[in-house]
Image (cartoon, rainbow, N blue to C red; front, side):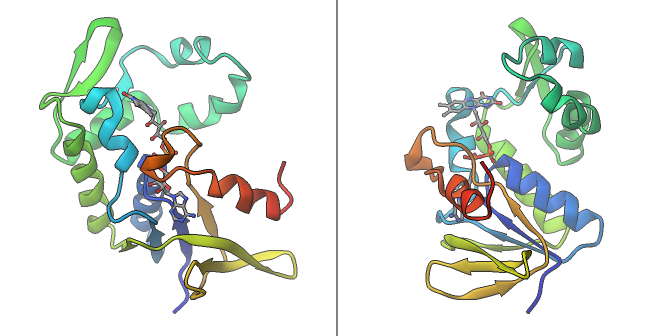
Length: 187
Ligand SMILES: Cc1cc2nc3c(=O)[nH]c(=O)nc-3n(C[C@H](O)[C@H](O)[C@H](O)COP(=O)(O)OP(=O)(O)OC[C@H]3O[C@@H](n4cnc5c(N)ncnc54)[C@H](O)[C@@H]3O)c2cc1C
């Protein structure tokens, strides 16, 4: 089976990326090494998930310590108001608290995870849990798929690496993505 896109990592970045690609008609496979999606998302905002800030985008860039220009196009392609609208369309009402911080009205990060899962299912994303990726495969210097820890190969001409950073490793973000990117020559 060949997919149009494989997304590695089922955190908020991977879930949103996979669902958005699915919405545009791509055949998408989301691979997550944990037994469930969004383990780190679950503990965010002390379990309440501070989903975004209600300020304008210039306020965001003013608060990015290094290289704010790097995030300029991302923040302008999908901004805080669009995220709030998306969550509402997925059944999550939000509220604004002190400092313009936005939370789900329910105060439950699990509601955000469930909403993103609904978004994935609505856009026909295939989800495989307990599926650690160990390598991004290439042929003639072009991506052609991934190799799972059990040596299963899955084919796709595109791979979105959304394996997170390295904080709170017990949630799954153990830095695999840095290694896989380095193996492809990224610094
Ligand atoms: C205690 C705490 C509180 C926070 N509170 C907030 C908050 O309130 N608001 C906010 O905006 N941000 C908050 N953050 C930051 C937020 O959690 C991160 O910015 C966010 O989770 C990053 O999302 P991500 O999808 O990039 O990565 P992650 O959420 O780390 O997801 C990466 C996923 O990739 C998976 N993965 C890794 N390697 C592999 C592999 N080899 N194969 C398959 N899957 C793999 C992991 O298991 C994981 O599920 C908080 C962080 C912490 C630690």
